[in-house]
Length: 466
Image 1 (cartoon, helix red, strand yellow):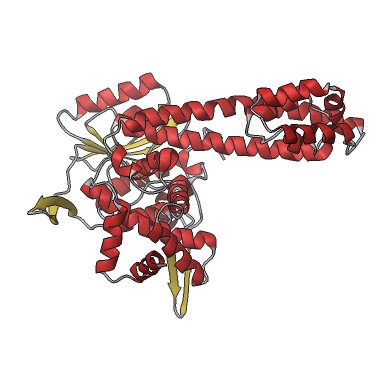
Image 2 (cartoon, one colour):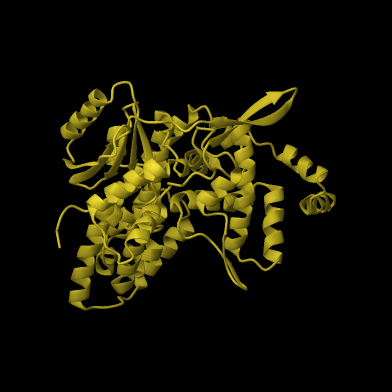
C-alpha cells in the first residue's frame, strides 16, 4: 500500500463531468451550415484524423502528475512523474516543444477544466483530449477485473485511449475568454446561492431550538434585516428588553413601512414566552447563531456583486440577444443557457447531443423482455439544473410551453417529469436558434406548430377563442 497525493480518478465527481465521447466513427464527419436562397442547408464534410508527433497519457494529481509518453516514430513508452509546480510544468512543455518542433502533441487527461488544463491550454501545439473518469474506470476494469488501480497504470491506459481510440474522443476546444468567464461566474454564483441556502437552513434549525419567534420577527433570513435583527437581539430576553421605539425605528430603517405589521410584531414581542430556559441550550445556540450570521453576511453581499459582474459581461457578449430572447430566461438563466451551449457551433452537431449530455434525455435499459426508462444520473448537474429551471420559468411567459406542460400533467406525469419533457423540447428550439444565430420568436414557433398541425396548436387556438 502506498500513500500519496489524491488523484483525479480517486475523486468521486465523475457524474458531474461534462466530458463526452464522440458520436461519429472515424473519419470524423462535421456538419457545415450554410444559407442559400433564403434556406438553410447542411453539408457534411469529412475530416481526416490528425497525426501527432507524440501521444501522452497524463494522470494528474494535486501534488504529482504521472506521465506516459510515446513518440509517433517509436513503440517505446517513457514513464516519469512531474511535481505540480508552475515552473516545472512550463519547463516540461518547453521541452516537448523543442523535442517535437513544428508538430502537435496529443494529451489525454481526466478533466475538461482544472489546474492542469488551465496550465496547458495556452500552448497551441498541445491538443487536449479529456477522458470521462467513468470511461477510464470501465476501460481499466476491462483489463483488471480485480479492481486493482495504480497511477502509472492509469497513465498508460490514457495513452492507449488517445493512441488507439482517438476517433472516439473529442479534442477540447476552449470557448473565448469572455464566454469562459461567464461560465465560471454563473457556476460560482450558484455555489454562493447553495451556500446561502445551507446557512439559512442551519439558522432556521438553530432558532427553532430556542427562539422560534425570531423567524417571524426578523423577516426573511436571506436579508440583511434578518442578520441585523439577530445580531442585536439574539434571544427573546434581549428583544423584550428593547424599547418599542427602538424596535419601531429598526423596522422603518430596514424598509418596513406597514404600521399594522410593526405594531403586531411589537405586541407579539411583549407577550411572547420562551421556548426553553435551559442555559446550556441558550448559550450554545446563541454562539452558533452568531457564527452562522458572520458567514451569511458576506455571502448575501457577494451574490448581487457577482450578478452585476455577470450582467455586465453578458450584455457585451455576441450571443446576448439570442439567449435573452427565450421567454423566462431573464438575467439569471440567459447567461446560464449561454454557458451550457458555448460559442463553438461545431461542439453540438445535433440537439440530441445536448439533450443527452445535460441529462434531460431519459435513459432506456433493455434486457430480454425487461425495459426500464429512467432519468440520467451521470451528467453535469449544473447544466441539467439550468435547462430544468428555465423550463419552469418558461411556462409563466410562453403560451405553448404552458399548454405543453399542462398536457404532460394530464397524461399523469409529475411536475418535474413534465418540466424535463418541456426542457427536452426547448433544447431542440434553442439549438436551432443557436446554430442559425437567430433570436427566438414566439409567433414564428406558434405558426410552425399550426403548419405541422400539432395538437398544441389546437389547444392554443381554443384558448385564443375563449
